[in-house]
Picture 1 (cartoon, rainbow, N blue to C red):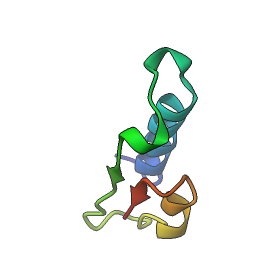
Picture 2: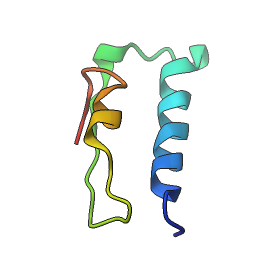
Picture 3: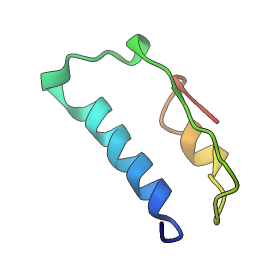
Picture 4: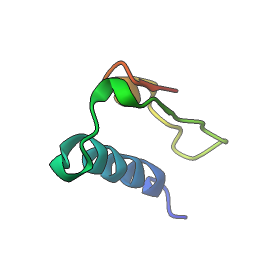
Length: 57
């Protein structure tokens, strides 16, 4: 995977979950835990948590 690809995938996933009315998903219905396995660049914890309380890294 190219550098930064993981964060792009993460941002795409977040957009799909949080903005799709067809999924009928409320922010309290799920939790997302992001695990960084030594990626370069590393996952930005602040960016992950900026998506809401259900996101943690």
